[in-house]
Length: 414
Image (cartoon, rainbow, N blue to C red; front, side, top):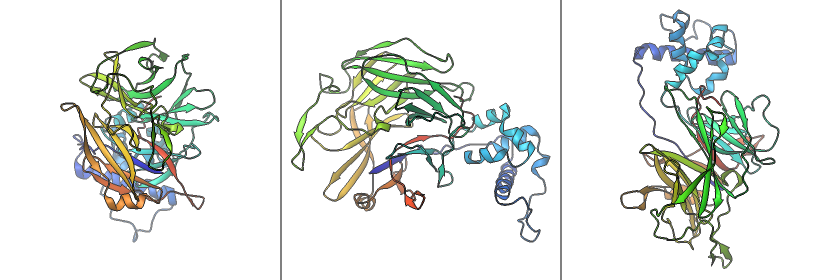
């Protein structure tokens, strides 16, 4: 099983109120304090200690201390409370959360899903290691499957009752959301956030359902804490040359191995309703895959939907997933030929109304992935591919079937 993880290009950040040298020294001192506390409370001998700045963190005002600590990696958040009383008060301070919200970008985390659908492992790209996910207090004991994510939040679905639960994996805060009543087939569950005053304070969850070509959606607004009324989507002639919607059609063909195969895709439970959302020209659009593998676009602002042109012929054998990178629609395609697994990333060009390849896995990695299970990270902007280290749990290599990317945000509210 092959897993491809995508992450956004790092953004440049600037500190206007604190000098570069001072912030560097303060951050290093803060990291040293966390490391020393994690190992031992005893101070190092003066001969072993590194040269320290002429000032200490105790000399910083509360506001300046919060600004310094807000630049620490998100994984350090839980350790702030155990360093000292002052730092513990910072971790719960509203102004500290505001300072964290002003950090424009954090290296993403990947919530991994294994064959048993147990969401318990996270890969931290800032530290390049694996972490166990601490389940929040009172977290439902029912089987939970991650189905969507945005910024610092992850949405889970209860496999028994079908309810939803929104969780901040860093703080453990959570909220249970009962699903609204509807009897038609569910196609997509999307999650998006709306930032107000640079604060991660609200989000929306969108459900797209219905029988093609009659689709509708319902929206949960976290600010109103309620599901809004159903909205009927109209079919718009989109970028596809097909005149009929193929979402509900099943076509059978003869595979390379001589077996009769249906075009309807078989997706893992964690990706069954997978979708992504993007804001384009002020309009929110939800993208998801139809049962036959075409990309569907639902414009929630204009209340219509359309189908993108098919990337590969309907009789081709391949795996496909939808992603959004820097606001642009992309798809990740895995295809096998002879003894090589090829992974390519395609971007949809609106001007030509066609798909264009933007990244391809190097042949050296493709050949190795054909026989072994691996996790690979792709920097789409630079077309750089990197294989992640093996995740070992109880002496055995952990294998994953999917992953959900999100920015670890302390200030993200559920």
